[in-house]
Image 1: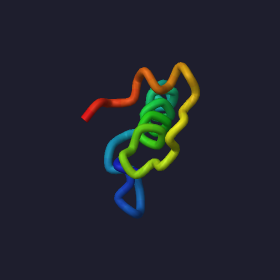
Image 2: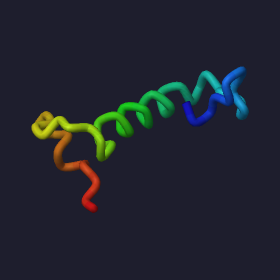
Image 3: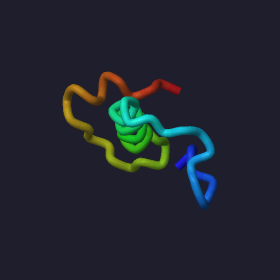
Length: 51
């Protein structure tokens, strides 16, 4: 959503970068401070940012 201005993307979205975009969205959703899930899968908890 950071790339969307309401009508179009304000930077070119390249198809070769789709995997990176999806990865960033997954990371954001999993580790956002408002995510109230306390028990993540075993391999994911190690990557949770420490604040």
